[in-house]
Length: 495
Image 1 (cartoon, rainbow, N blue to C red):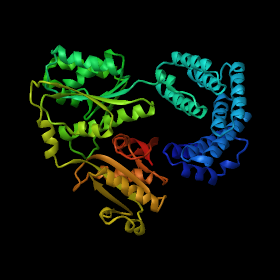
Image 2: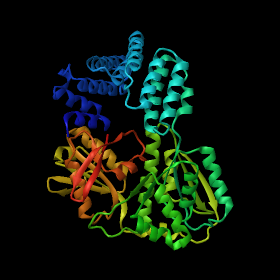
Image 3: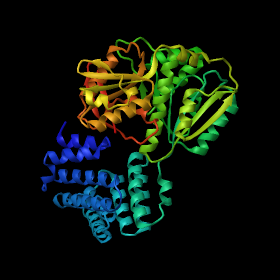
Image 4: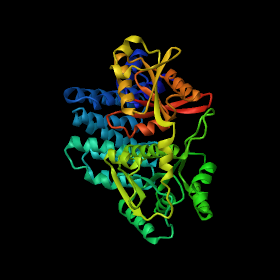
């Protein structure tokens, strides 16, 4: 990993103070003739400014603006120049912002290749016009950019976030940005045993989708509610993001075929059109997980995907589920309710009783739990923990705890990092027998901890998605990939 990428990864992981310390220790602050170093400096100072208030915030925004401006002076590029302009405004220098915005417009006119793509070229023009007070021109330029790349959702969201900062600083209304905001994300789920020929069910699904207009659907594809909702989403033009608790063929055999052959072609068609298809893989020494607990974990991951996607796109997450009339709420309904996001339910008569699936989860010895692994945990740090959080198991030079209480493990990890920011910690959520954890899961937790450079907790993708649902203020960012004995493992940072 290059120093630039390492610093940027730490910053993206939410630890701006550690990223800045590394930036200084490597001497990058002295690289006055390096546009890459100056742009990175501007990014890091901007992150610090967002985390502070008052005079310090204004000062840091101003310093970030000058770092970006210095980068643009060395290498004429619209990206650092427009950042310098916006940050100058936030740094209390509107005249400087005005001048840099004019420079940006001139650069765009003289350089037809400016901007990463057609969208960013027009979005940059719109931002410059916004800084110059040309509201009409800014709106037109942004609309033109979005029209050229209408599904560049993350780019649109980043622009909206930047424009909201500018408009707030100018004391102007940002309501007009809502029409350009990416559409909501929808988590969908429901029962298997329903009458798929009941037109009332389809009409209810279509009505909710027409009203809420989701652009993204997150769920599985079991016969019944899942497939009905997924078909309606696809018909409405939404992207399908599918996650399955088993490999495709195994899931097809367990959760589709038993309901009748007529579901199979519909399942296959939806798999074909899915924008993303994820599978919860099992490690080599694990037995196949029972369907109840496997589905429960997949539900949590899928809900996290939905919430995260909405957060990245600065839109809203919602949920739609089909239940049996008189059913008790399943765990995922309660988890979603705790997030405070909208949840829509359609109650229908069951054709078949499928309560056995949730009963299997209750009887299973394996639970959804987490391994908190600390590499090189010293006794002073351990002694500083509350008594109830000291029950770590030794594993060579490392120690670990397994618990179904994610909030407790998160609190423990924060305490350890406060005691020693260099602690190397990982948190792995999976289906685990707390008394006899699979060796491969412990090895994976160990591998992740050893990959840490401190300052944050490392985790994998599925764990990061589950942690997205946990209350409290924390930052989760993808930072790279770890090569393990069982293949590449996406690494995420929790700070």
